[in-house]
Length: 369
Image: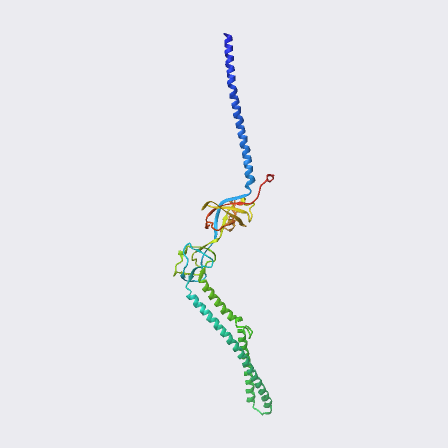
């Protein structure tokens, strides 16, 4: 009986050993797989992080970018009544095309008046030249008269000593000589005054006189104002808010009429963080996409990187010396020129854009040391 019990116990132990070995091997395989996966994850993370670090220094990307275009509110420096508006809202216009015009009547009147004044100045200069020559001849005549008076007085002065003439006659001769001498001085002064009107040159050309130049300037100003009464497009673009101007409205000088947005002078302005622009430079190629046109990419290039942040031009710049100063990463404007081709859809000012700048910089492992 004892022998049978021992045999039964041994058989049970053998069976347990046979059943326990596979379980042990399974646990070992699981532990090995677990450690392998953990090590593989660490290696993958290191390799992925290294690859990201090596490649991340080349590209500058941001979605803080918007389309910009030359735009202006049209105005003119003269005042008048709006006579014509030959364009309509949203119309595409070309450089030099008439956008609106003011009533030209008052400008024509001012121009006619200035031209008449110019003609009168020409006549006045010609008259001044003739008067100057007449004053010179009159001076010569009076000078001859003085010479005659001098001779008469000299004779009377000699004869009065012999009582051949009376003292009264001698005094009259002396007074006449003095009066004619004063007349010569007055004639000379008049000649000098006329010569001054001729800028000191009796042979001066009419066009070179100050009065003529002044009158000519008034004509030029009147012509300029008349020309500015017709407002033309300074560049190709699209007019907007045209309804703000109406025919018959009085438009004051420098008052905004309506807007013009350029269709050719268009660019993208991006605002990357300063930490992203370490290797960015002018001329770097750029990929640009717009939210309005998903799935389409434009090529471009960096036209300029601003020499200052927008904060430098703000009305109230940050006061870094204050006690509550907090450092904030600044953004630096980057202007991107778009390579547009015929048939491309229009780009409108204010559109959102995403940009990717290829700086061409490649990191190496030596940068870590």
